[in-house]
Each structure stands twice: as structure tokens, then as C-alpha cells.
Image (cartoon, rainbow, N blue to C red; front, side, top):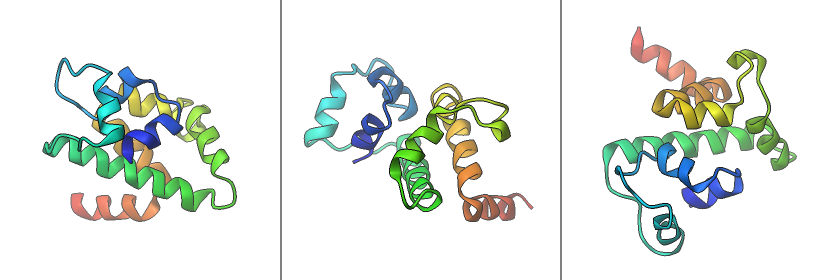
Length: 119
């Protein structure tokens, strides 16, 4: 499901490998198996990223409930509150912290829970 979602978002295969923190040297052709029948590696880092990606997808659905295409457009447009960076670039380039940044921006309840943990 997550790999399908990344495809729908237009994220190329090599970037999907990075976003998911798949093991070093994972060939992009392996993503086909994840589409079909192979589960993602049961690795804490991978599972943490999957959780954030699903949180981002859910936040996009609730932020833009009438048109899912607007959520896709938002991911690809520079965002003033994210220093004029595209959310998609933040997720690809900044790893786990990028996923958290995008999720925090979209999901105020997640941001509130995170702030409670650091207090």
C-alpha cells in the first residue's frame, strides 16, 4: 500500500528506496515485489518511516477532503511555511526528519503530541 501511494505521488523508484530507508544496495526493481506480495522489511527505521508516510497521507485526506488532486499538488509546490521548499523534496532529501517536518506541518494533532513529548 505504501509503495503504491509513493507511486501515486509521483516519487521515482530510487527516491522511494531512500524515503523508506531500505537497506543499502536495494535495487529499485525490488519495489515491484513490494507492490505484489512481499512485505517491507521488518526494520524499526523502515516501519517508523511507513508510519509517518501513512500519517502524511491521512493528513492530506483531511486537509483536502474534497479533491485528492489538490493534496498531490500541495506536495509538489513550494510552501512558504517550509522555507519555500516543496514538501516532496523535503521528504526525499531530509530523510526521517523531513517526513516529520511535513507531517507536523499538515497534522496539528501530531504536532501537538510531539510537543508534549519534548516538554
